[in-house]
Length: 196
Image (cartoon, rainbow, N blue to C red; front, side, top):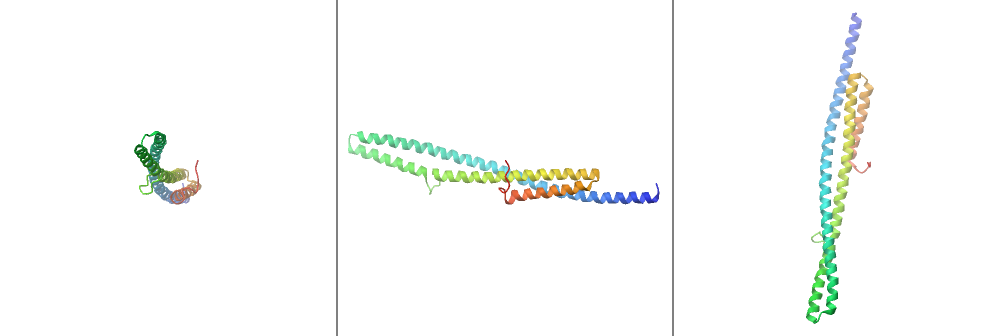
């Protein structure tokens, strides 16, 4: 091997080493964003599970109020029939007093702005929790897509080091940018892109 060929081989090796350092830096940056998207994804997933449990508990409370409300309404209607056949005015007054108390409770079960635990308030709260849950799930799905993009980018960078094909490194960078876009959508506008 001549000195010219040795020099050329040495320059080629230095050039390849320079590309490999750039690719290694790109891998490090993509891996950093992968760590962010994985952390954000896990956080969003945990939040969605917690919100789903809270929404379910609130709907259960709503159903319990509905059952109690229906029972009291039926009892009041049944007692109305007893008023007509009550033998004395005192008994009729006592029955009407109980009917009025039950109807007031039925009305409070329907809406209780003070305690915020009437059916109307419970429904609104449960629906709000479901909306928050859906937002957390949308974030989670975007972070998952971002993580997949970052992982693909890292694999493509590794292939670029092995093959020396810089086009793979450029493509990996582009896929990494796509991952950043999906991470940004998840963070700032989770309902902008919908997944089935």
